[in-house]
Length: 246
Ligand SMILES: C[S@@+](CC[C@H](N)C(=O)[O-])C[C@H]1O[C@@H](n2cnc3c(N)ncnc32)[C@H](O)[C@@H]1O
Image (cartoon, rainbow, N blue to C red; front, side, top):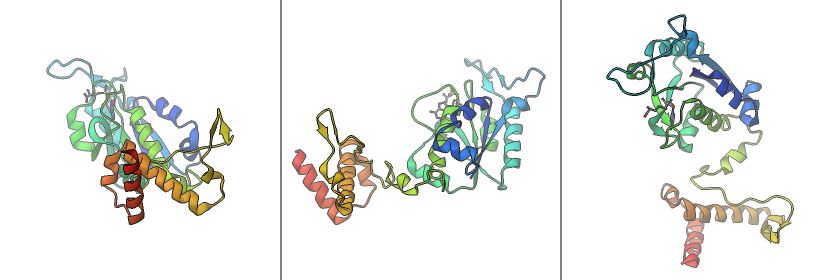
């Protein structure tokens, strides 16, 4: 997958990709991340990319033209003719794992991150296919949100994790949260690891993990279960679990 990032702070994206599984995938070109610095497309010798908003609102806005030329270049360098263009914005659709899965099917995308108080609306109208938010809060720039998208999507790109099953088992993999996990030592501060996990009985372990994921989801994020078809054994187990808790 190729990801072009339009940003005025490429060093932030580069720093975020300097380590970790997705960073390593980027370093080995399993994930091809190319950075485009909006400042390189400024139209004056001072490198200006922002100006005062019309109407006298506080703060500055990114001007349409430097962003447009920078995005044009990113689109030109993309390996596909019309990569999806995504603007990171608190006003966009909130990023969820289902969206991450859809994005991971793409061959290429251009992520556009802004600074200041945002961008001239006409740029959005002309260039943006979709707007993505990372949550109902405002951060000072689109670079961290872009890194979140790159990381979440990147770990689903084949070969990035080394073990595809670990992404399937992650929270939201099957509209379930992942259950509790344990590592050595078997006993820590008087707490022992559930005995089934050290039993060597793989079927029993798989069943236990499924049940833990179901109960954790029911306790913490019950709305996820309404979007998921439960089979009869899952339903029966969950009913028993719910009755036990009441
Ligand atoms: C300070 S914010 C501007 C917020 C803008 N004035 C508004 O109220 O919608 C600067 C930039 O950071 C990015 N950003 C901030 N919060 C974000 C969020 N929750 N999700 C995605 N991007 C965000 C966007 O690119 C945004 O244009």
